Image (tube, rainbow, N blue to C red; front, side, top):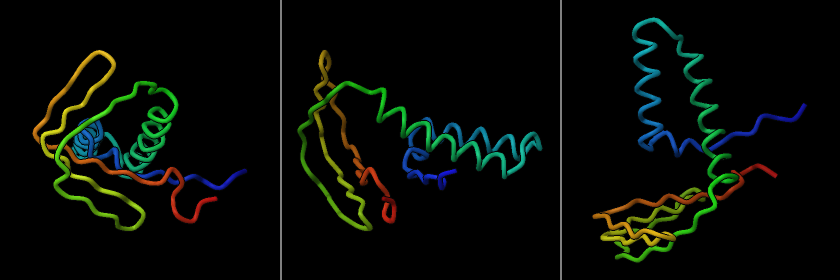
Length: 111
């Protein structure tokens, strides 16, 4: 049996991840779920969202905007882009500000 793979927890801060976390918190507070099971659900979420984005998303986008801030710490790049315009195949989307976090596909220490 292989060693368990650890996934980044980045997507927990997405709107979907926050909704899941809020729901799990409510289930814990009302006694319908124990905290250990909630952690297993979050761990499965980390794995599922990472694999779905890697294997199922085929769309490409380009964007332009003003690079406000960038940093590289602990093998993680973070970019703050102001007034970005995203161009997809059939749509263009504008925003006031966007934060992009980029990590290596393999976590440090993995082979």
